[in-house]
Length: 440
Image 1: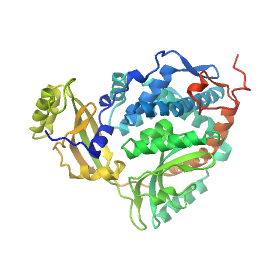
Image 2: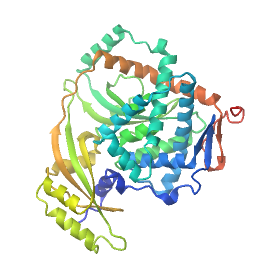
Image 3: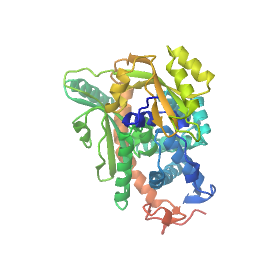
Image 4: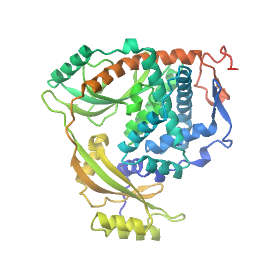
């Protein structure tokens, strides 16, 4: 049997079904009720922390080794601490996000991944990860945005004239080079710059290995754009901020870029030359099938695996594949309308060359063999210019981003934050811990 054993196997493993990327329970804390941090009156337990790590593993399609799982714990805990500060500030001012806001955001995430909320929740539960972990993250993000908008509405005010100027500039930009950009922002207070830089480098490494940039932005980024998967939209070289993205080719991710407030990571999804229209791009829909490896056998000697593969390779069309998967109770996942440009550039030719309805060569992964069957290829609808309301949101978001980063630092400084075992998290330090009193 012929297997793909090189880089492409890593790609297929990284985008394969969630059940094929199982969290390793032996790396969890033995005491799931143990407190690891206290923020105000709220306790973060080791179970809360490990659930969030597993959530990141599943949603970003990243398999974490024991070493980098250990390394990621600090950044994840730091994010969870700062989310609680954000949520508690929003609760104090009675602007906490409503359940409908949270569920709308969850539905958007599910839709982007070609699934329903029910399917996503079922996938999470099969891995022992509650959907509440994602809800907590989204509630904190949305609540904090509500607070900053409410507290600084006078500085966020965008007039009709501002909107008209912006839309006119977009029209004029059609004659300029433009870039479709995503970002991840990791905040630093200066004292933890080295550890944050290391975390940023680790994220870049995972993205280059095929991890989903948008999902990592959703889980790690501390910019308001996190709720949109880090999406900044189409911008030009005169856009505010660092222009590192102008040096990238579509499909590439930047190295971490340090600024006064932290580190930025940029991903360039597409590029438009002067005079070109924005390309809608190709959308790929495909089914991923996992053929599990039987315990005690190698791939070459496993009779069950060979029988499954022989049956799949005889399939003549999509209906045959669906029937065989069902009859043999194999695990599969459907990915719908994934933009080809969001797949690492070095792997795009694989999807371009695979005909609709034909199985790929099997890719060997730690959990068995993964094969891909492309179910549809189509052109996306051409992008439309933003409406006035959308333009207003974009302009408010740019101003909100600056205020948000500054204000979060202020509230973290004033919060009661205690790491219960500082030696376990040496790079997480909050100067206020020694001076602020625990809430009564």
